[in-house]
Picture 1 (cartoon, rainbow, N blue to C red):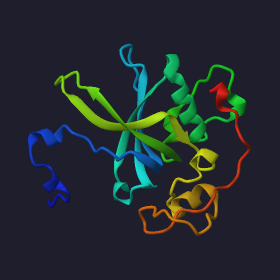
Picture 2 (cartoon, one colour):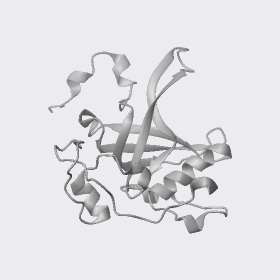
Picture 3 (cartoon, one colour):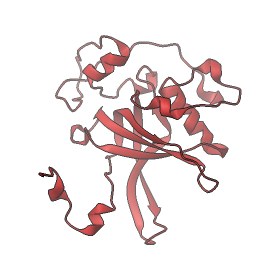
Length: 191
């Protein structure tokens, strides 16, 4: 059986590593949600597939993001729920009981930033990226207006996405659209 891509595994260390998506703005799809919480783990892990973005060579890569579901970090989970359409602004201000599995397959935009941490296993500093604190955006969010989109895939959510007249290749060689479907401005200070 042929294993395309197996040439990238050059040592046993490569089997424990993961892809690092370069810092930038991306159009992504929720690929998987691991919300099997334990007392020691009060976060879910969301795997995002890059559909388009600032760096065309990142298309097809997967980013894994830890999203806290309690304490101060719960704002990130609420922002993710808003960006994927799981909730609306009218749902804010009360305790939420959400099924994040319902976000699998949904599209959104994210802002990835450089991040470093010290590994508990090796004690070495690890360089990676993570979603900016509240860097989850609906495709229609004004904050995501400059994020290059995969027009075909975005059209599945937004309807017809106009051809671009501006710079910004989206990974499929097409240009990013100049704007998004407008939505009412939301007051994020409550999130």
